[in-house]
Length: 209
Image (tube, rainbow, N blue to C red; front, side, top):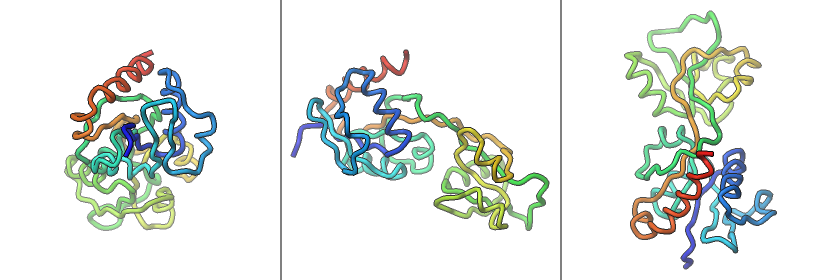
C-alpha cells in the first residue's frame, strides 16, 4: 500500500487542462506522463499518483474509495449523483448542456423522443418543465439521432456549437453550464484531510488568478 493520494482523472481535454493547473500550482509532473498509455501513473516527486479513467467512471472510483480525489465534469456529477464531496470548481473545460434538434420538424406522437447519453439529466429537466418525453440512451454520435429519425431532439454537451451546425442542428434550450470540479471521497477527506486541503488550497490560488 502507498500513503500517496490517488487522483482519478479522465484522459483528453480535462486531463491536459488539469495538468496545467497542477503545474501552475507548483507541482512537479513527469514530462512524459501526458503521452503515457499506463492507467496508473506515479508522480515520484509529489504525494499523489494518477488513475486514468473514462470520464463517466471518475465519480464511481471516488465514491468507492479506490481514488481519494477525482476531476470530473459537472455533467457527469449531475448524471451520476454519486456520494462524493465537490470541493473546488476548477473552471476548466467550460461548456454547457443543451437541447438541440432540427429546425421546423414536427414531433411525432404525444411524447417527443430525446436521444442522449445523459438520461437522468434529461429526464429531470423535462419533468421539471412539465413535458412528457421518451428518453433514448446513446453512448456516442448523439447528433445522428435526429438525422435518421431515431429521435426528435437531443440533449448533449455543447462547446463551440460547430458539431451541431455541421449536422444541421440548432440549439433549442440551455440546460446548465458545465465546468470540471475537484471531488473527494468522504472517508478519504476524514482520514487525509491535511493532504487534501493542501492540494485544494494550492489549486484554489491558481484558479482564482
